Length: 332
Image (cartoon, rainbow, N blue to C red; front, top):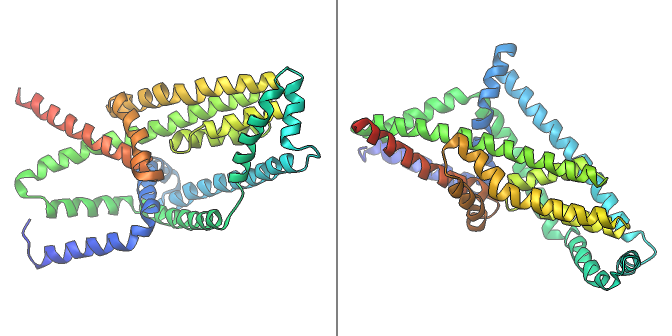
């Protein structure tokens, strides 16, 4: 790459572009990832619709419908949840003590009620949480808008990226760079598709647990557990532990105890250490240990977006390994 006027202006263009999208970088990254994963589905729909923009509109429409159903269902759940705690004539501590005393566990009431009250009060909307919610909705809208065009114009995007790589890459290594990018694409596509599949499995397991214990809003809670598995920073215990406490609160002691241990085994330990690492590693060739480290360390290092950045780094590491292993096999 020669540092001529064209190259300098191109680098300035990229720098300004990154500066402009920096406040919305997470929305842009999610849109890129979404277009990458949904592209095969769009190609299949193209055969029926004969129009890539119609196919994209169908996919975005389904996503919006699912999101709307989730928001409506969640709003009703939150209203019912708060109403159940604040409409009782007895205080939370007295109610729990009354329930637990039947089983000789009245001393647990104050500690348990303190935990639940803190959990509920932390969910109360403040000015900061309202601001965060509005910004999140704005980012979601922007992300879906960008996703539409990235998905509909995926061929042009890929062509532009290929031309950009060709321009920046020295002639003697262009073939190697393209080979590397092909391997990287295979790794990422398989990883994230199987990652979503693993989250769905967790959601099914969660629904089974909530169904067996006759927990209200079982479908919504299962969806939240799937989201908790998909975004490791939103862990599933934030869902099944309050549900367990609710059962104890209303007098369903054994259901609460069962759900607590079921959730600990099948919604926390099993997904974290087996389902997600093993399932995602099979298709992507990323070692299960590297998957586990990336999913835990990513959010710790980068915050909520770490669930993407962690696997992204792990994918690059694995791709470099796969590439040089492939080259080594060629040499022999």
